[in-house]
Image (cartoon, rainbow, N blue to C red):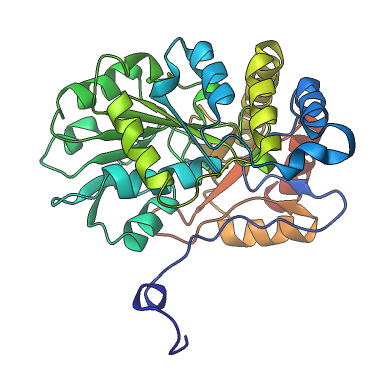
Length: 355
Ligand SMILES: *Cc1c(COP(=O)(O)O)cnc(C)c1O
């Protein structure tokens, strides 16, 4: 604390991202990164964008990322004015809070979900109410059919990995014409059902996605939002009052190339999904209770072992998983799906502790 700090800063509780160890080859299963590289076309596109001697870098990038939005729009069968892009979906979400979720009534999101939501609500001074998940960590849509200033759901949810069927989300959107429903689909490509197909039908639906997880580009910082052009306009107004050039040239070129190589993307998702089923079975054999996951991570608890201690012992072996010291979930570990070799290293280490 310092007398020079603004009142806002004095009262912030910043989000704490997972550790990025500096070890040469950690088994890094703590931040839901993809274990496989992006399409080779991504690297080619970055080289092409750089040009000789990086001459293109003298110039500002396209502030509207038009080519990227057109590529993504074509991929989803929507129009470019229904697409917003930002510097990672975290930034997109920040703009969503300011542009679309600040109203008189409190916004609603689950008690167990992505930790950035309460952080942004506090940053922008937006009242919120958390809605408890049921005892199996499922979202109950009926709980959200009450007056509110907006609803924010991650589907699949984080850190549980549980997914809601499309019809359930549609029921919420159809019955909430007074408020914006935001669906954060960071993990949708690993087994969820996307609501992007519904944006033309519902002017109050905003879908947020990212290239960080399924498209292996966490390092490029590109996030997206899809919705009615009026919602997208609101996001652009905030963006153009904050940073006109959130996506650099290389990020725009890389993300475009990633969307153009659909075969690579699908193969990589399929590998992660296969490894998830394998790891879930392996953890089950070790006595873990495994929440059914539609994401690239698993949420698991051992009835006889303290999760925090397990995480600490794994860390000694340079195996990183995530443990949240929070009510209801402090007996769980969130484990990112790695390569099969990484999952085997994890299972081997755990066997020694719980076997
Ligand atoms: C990872 C994640 C994000 C942020 O992704 P970036 O695009 O890398 O900023 C957003 N929402 C959820 C639920 C996530 O897990």
